[in-house]
Image (cartoon, rainbow, N blue to C red; front, side, top):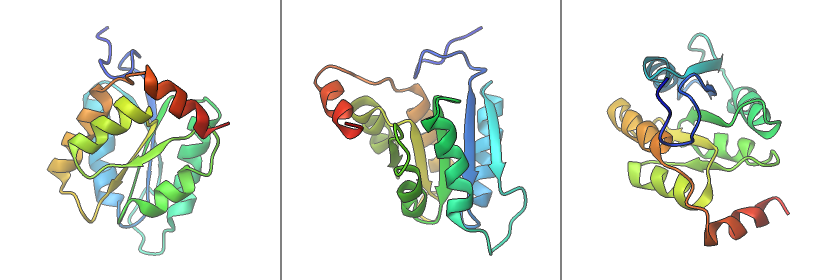
Length: 155
């Protein structure tokens, strides 16, 4: 089985994915793309578009799964990405990064070991979202001087 260049895990790695109403369409595309790449996306919802959906209801299960070590990575999307990041980063050991470009996703992984990708659905196209996803999946944590800094987050 081919290994994921970004994390050293096999492509059958589970990745939790969630969204609110603003990120629903992009979430569907992300889930499809993860499956196409050989990952096992766990879609925590919503299962249907509902304008009354609230981001904490879908951000919490993704962040909890990463925080508890059930999965190594998660992906969230909402309108700006900010609400989901606020929720996710309240959980221990979660480093959720809002990425609006492949370069930001790469730096979030390389320098900050971001384990939750947050996409601002109102500010990236579906095509840009896929480019950001790929860059985040394919980038490894650089370690070195960054390890000390990342370790201070949870201390």
